[in-house]
Length: 201
Image (cartoon, rainbow, N blue to C red):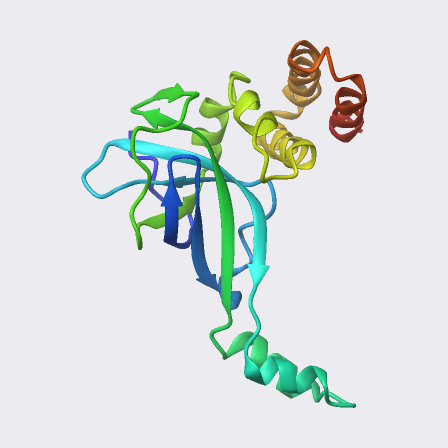
């Protein structure tokens, strides 16, 4: 299945390892990606689709921004020009949580990371539904030292629940909570915090 049809391009890979990657984009293209979103990257001529979660979005400054923040009054038109017309660089950090080989989710680190300038796309609803049917990607998030794992996993679960029919969403979050209770049975404060974050409304 072609998982790249009709999904937004959010950036291109800047640097990568087997555990994650950073991609770059422009601030004007920052409408779609958000914290906890599932993204996909693929090396050229490689059928394996790498799946990751956005855990940080950084907007770099430039000399003009530094001058503007020192001004007493900033003209609205100047701010709009800075945001809409200038190419302010944005870095998006992604933790790898698995991959797709055809229609089959693999909940392990991929054999190879993406390469510089490989495109990075959001996962569409169909891929997101397929990948999040099982909760085996939880371990990679919970064991990652460089990410806010509880908040990241909760945001990802809310996104995964949202692509399901309304009648399935509460049950999905309950099953996710049950799996978390198994994984975090020895760390009750962490478990309780996560369960509060994913509690159905």
